[in-house]
Image (cartoon, rainbow, N blue to C red; front, side):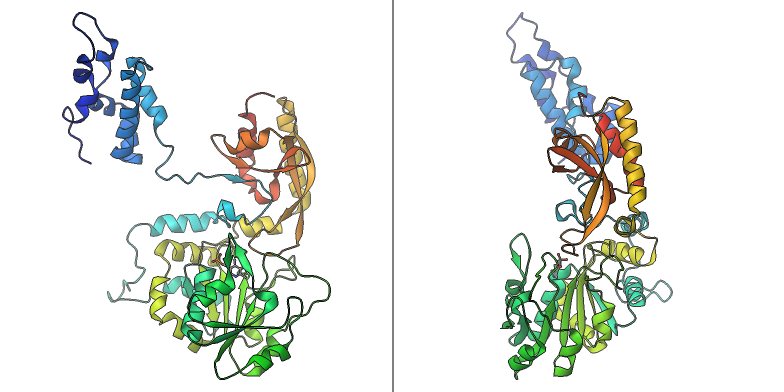
Length: 455
Ligand SMILES: *Cc1c(COP(=O)(O)O)cnc(C)c1O
C-alpha cells in the first residue's frame, strides 16, 4: 500500500476532525496528530523497518480512531500506537518449554542448537544451495547436508531428505508401491497424532495395504504367507506414541529380509545410532545393517534438528525415490538443509542435552531457582519430577528430573506473560520441569516468575 502523507491518511487527522465539531465549540479532537507526524516518531519509524509500514499504519489508525472517539487524549496517540504494534513480524511467539516433555508437538518439537540457528540465519540470503562456486555450474541441491547425513549413517548406500517423516513414507509408497501391495502388521497400523493415520496416508498414494498378523502378535510367517506377485515391500512401523505389553510378538527386520522382498522401516524418531537411555527406541543403523532396503525417520524428534524426513537406504532404492517426480513437491528448503547439516555436524543441541542431563544437576538448578524466588516472597519449592520424551518417541520411558513447584495460578499467568513459559499442572501445583529447559534459560524462567503480579 502506498503512503501519501496528507492525502488519504490525512483524512484521519486534524483537518477531518474539524468537521465533527460545531462552529465556535473548540473540539480537542482537532489536535489529533496526523499520520505523517506520528510516523516521524522514532519508535514508529523504527517499527516500520522491523514490522513493515502496513502494520505500523494500522496501529496508528487504530490509535487515531480512539482519539476521534474521545476515548484517548490526542497527546497520547503516539504512545497508544506504539502499544498497539505487534511484538514481532511473525505471530510465532518464542516460549520456554518447561513441560518436561522434551519433544512437545504443540511447541514445535525439537529446539534447534545455537549452531543450527546460526546456520539458518546465514542461509537466509542467497546461498550456493544448487551452485558450485568453483566451476560456476549447477550442483546437487543440499549436497553438504546430504553428505553430513551419509557420514553419520555409513550403513546406508545413499540418503535423501524431504519435508517430514510423513512425506518420506508417501514418497516411498508412491515410488515403490503405487498400484501394488504394502504388507504391514495389524499391530503397526498407527495414528501419528491429530487424526493422521498412517494406513490412510499410505492408501492415499494408490498403494494397497495388506494387513497381516494381529494387534499384539505378528510373525515372519504371517508376512511370508501374504507375499505375492503384487507385493512391493514389507513395511515395519515403530509404534512411537504407545506401548503394547504382555503377550506380544513382532518380527525382526533380520527375519523379514530373507523373504526376498524389500523391507522398509519407519523408525519415526530419527535416532541415528542406539541410545543407552532409550534401549527400546529403534535407530537407523540397526535395521540397515540387518538388510532393510530403506529407513524413514523425522528430523525434528530425537535427532534434534529441523522438521524434515530422512530417507536412508540402498543406493538403487534411494535413487529411485529422489528421482521420482513427487520428490520435487516434497523437497526441503535451504533453511532446513542448513539447520540439518549444523545439527548433524555441530555441537549437541537442546534435545541431546536434555536427554543426557544429570538428574543431580537438575535438582541443584531447581533448588537454586527456588531459593532465589522464595527470598523474594514467591511460594516456590524444588521438587522431584519425571520428564518424558514426548510424541517424538520412546513411549513409556520416564526420565528422572527436577521441577520448580509454584501455586497453580502461576500456570496461566506464566503462559500468558510477556515471555511465555509453559509448565504443567500436577496435584494442584504448577510445575516447571527443568529437563526440558536449557540451563541458560534459568534466568529467563526466574524473571518470568517474578513478573507474575501478587505473591
Ligand atoms: C512421527 C512419526 C511419523 C510422522 O513423522 P512427521 O515428521 O511428523 O511427518 C511417522 N511415523 C512414525 C513412526 C512417527 O513416529
